[in-house]
Image (cartoon, rainbow, N blue to C red; front, side):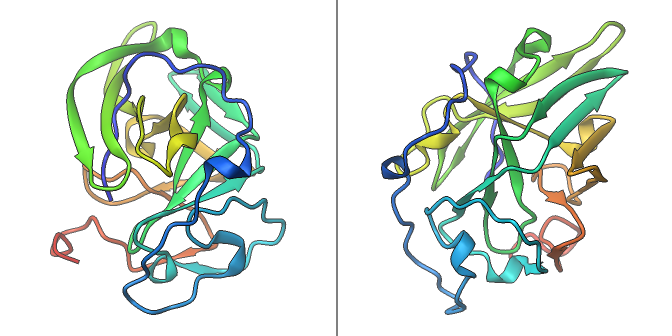
Length: 202
């Protein structure tokens, strides 16, 4: 999984037609992902059975998620949406990408540094600038994602470990271990997860 970082503020996070999300191929472990979240296709799940991150594919899959997702920091609600998409990749908890229209982009300031994901492209990072503090590189984005990840353009992702609170449908999110990956752990997501000591080459 690749860490992302934001660039210029994206445009409104309007819904994207299914044609923009082509099927992602390749599931080297040979497991069959549940139909609602197979590679590249977007769906709106209603039930929440347990998901093993070892059943997520590589290249990663994209999935719409209409649960309410919030991010808070220093008393500010910095993101609030029911239009998130999740990126699902083998061994990692999901990453939630939130439309720019549902993010307090006035609190974001472009940060230095970029990273390259072999699947999604170049990520840029943002500092979260609050009244009395700055949370460095707490946010990232893909301003020009590769096909078929175009739906990520104009969206932002947050490190749960660098803000005060992230929730999904009212459930407090646990941060993925480590300082590079930014996965969100909720009840239905089962590990073990990459990111902790000794997992670098998983």
